[in-house]
Image (tube, rainbow, N blue to C red; front, side, top):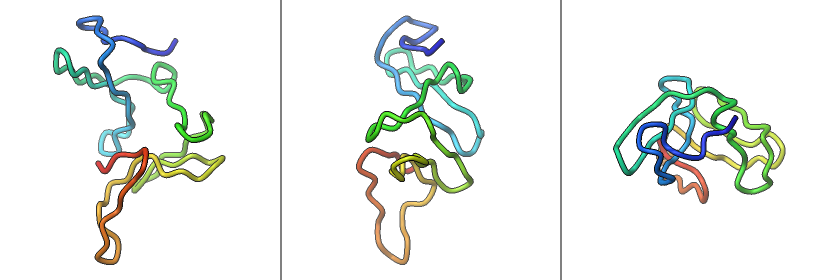
Length: 91
């Protein structure tokens, strides 16, 4: 079952993302500052571009296998140019 609220304070002001260092999905609550590891099933992570749940996580980035949208990356510069991810996060 996907998580929609913080399990600590029941607030909806949360962010769910994949943490490349932990190799786990994490939930961050902006109301009570909780940081919780969650399962893939609880995360219900999907692509903001095509709504697909076919997300691939490798060592450097997370991307949608269906449309190719990069959702998060661990590096912020490539060949001297700063990377800007439209919907993603630089971790």
